Image (cartoon, rainbow, N blue to C red):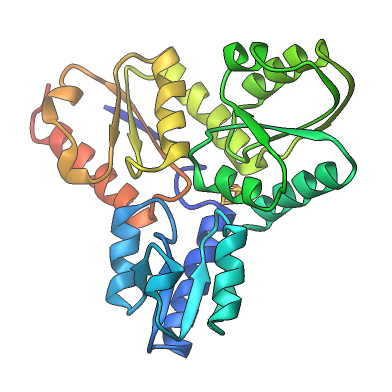
Length: 283
Ligand code: SF4
């Protein structure tokens, strides 16, 4: 059995930074420490933080006092205002690349462009970007949705950081035909592009692909979808226990990748379980 593990599997720079910030805060401010929503989209990593004393609250209203950590996807404008009003200590773990996307959105808005975001309208990163713009912001996920919009006089486009470049390009091409002036900022995170490219390469070489990451993680879902285009035997799991032995039967080349919020210890456990199952006779 050959097991190919993606070099890019697991924590990206922004998620690792957010986890480091939270762990450091847990030492510094052991009392009344909260994250607004789960710090990252991985239930097992969030559980680990809870054990360190970092509590999760969905609303600023439910944080009575102390310290609040803003997660890597960024924070809604109204929550920032509320946190300041309540005089909470704020630790901002927003990924600098997400901040850059927020900067582009504000820049376009200030310069009179209508704003279009290529991304998932319900993703917290997109919702956070929108919350700072005092005007309607369109969000599209595919070419079909973009075709229904416009025309515009001045249009600015940015992408959610974890979008695929090809889809972004296609949507930009559609909008170009419907506007007099177009400004495009490619806010796609390089780490995401590299991870997706490496994953496709592996998926084409193997006869089964395992994708590890939170079911609530958009970038993991996208990785699994990309894999399925090249490898129909693609399975998305959160933990090693979810691995079904029959998935590996008759598979001699197995690929392994993981989303940006998947901790390395979970990847290791899955790797060990695959090796164990193959050794113990799953044919
Ligand atoms: S995927 Fe990219 S943008 Fe998102 S948190 Fe990680 S480094 Fe930041």
